[in-house]
Amino acid sequence: MALNDLLENFRGIKGFLAAGILDFTGDVLETIAEDENIDLAMVGATYTDTFRNANEASAKIGLEEANEMTIVTPKGVVIISSTGIDAPVNALIIVILDADGNQALTRMNMKKVVPEIIKELG
Image 1 (cartoon, rainbow, N blue to C red):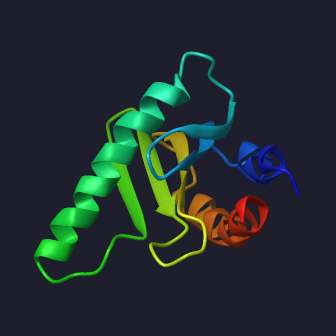
Image 2 (tube, helix red, strand yellow):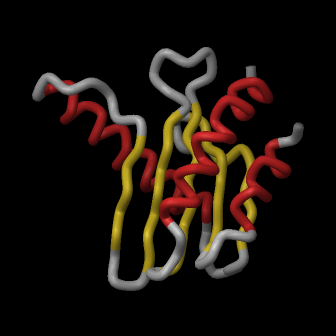
């Protein structure tokens, strides 16, 4: 299954704006968007750094690396999920929703597509 097909799982979710699959350095591997004003290359690179910093901070206080991070703003939500630090492929999936977007369904779909991303990139 192609990476684009995996991202299409998010398009029907209420409030969906954009989604992308990134390598762990922030390089975009695939994106889709309902809102052309969202520059996923820039957003992905920026949030990848944020995610990596959160991993380092978590490790410093004795927690393990983060699997997921959610950023909530007045106008929207950014959810980032990792394939896992010990996965054979280290990648991130990022989904951007409007403020009323369905976060629960987004997370469920993320859990469903992460193994497929690993299989596709592995």
